[in-house]
Image 1: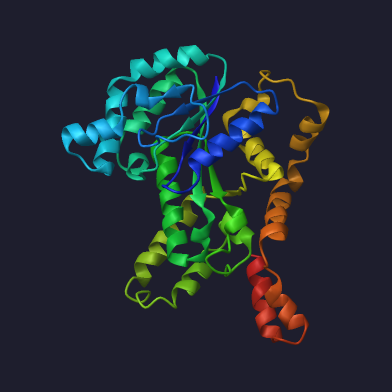
Image 2: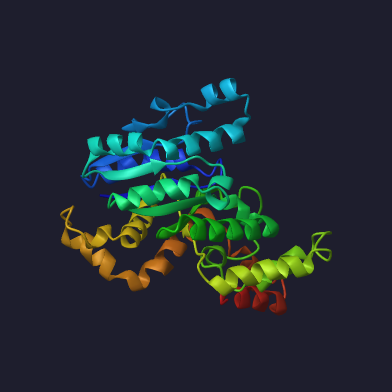
Length: 316
């Protein structure tokens, strides 16, 4: 069995992603089962084949144990860990289907608490080949300090979950909703020279106080060289296809024989050399206005030094 463990902070679009992906994969005649492991997710836009609410609900936990939302979520996941046989039994009902596992959004579950990690380990023992799909809201790119936090959270999650991992920059159609990006989109997806991010932080009044800390955090991300992002717009079929291809490569589904592929799809994998450029160019052309600064210079509205600065950043 193959599947995706869909994780990410609250509001990153995990449930919307699962609803969109199950429709998208069904178009390829892939048999999909959706598993809701978020006990706080009581309104689902998809039909859950397995739902944790059949085992435990966060409302019952909060009422009975007088816990808050965060404590209730942790308790629910630890309860599921102790009752993993229930999940294993339910999974037998969807045997040989492709799994989409919709997980809670509490970040601590993937960075500090071991419940999710232990649950995943049990699924791996069942020969379920999972890839963790970590969704991050693209609007964090508009704030340098938030983007550094996102990078650290992604890196920590990758190390904690210990699965093949794909970071996804979600809601790219709204990427400039909270302000124009300082750099081109590929700077954020490919996580290029982060020294430019430190330059952006100089405008922050607390920058000088935490300058050494920010520099150290950036160095950690760059030293590991593990964090990159795939841009995603759920409503865009081309975007969904690119994400699906990356995920299928990560968990080995692309090399299996569970699904008959036509020649065109096979050729799309063979043309991987153009894949990274195409996925970035698509987002840039559809949803961003990244060339306006250069246009101003070309039309006499700026100076050559400013234009060269933009080109240097674009070239990494």
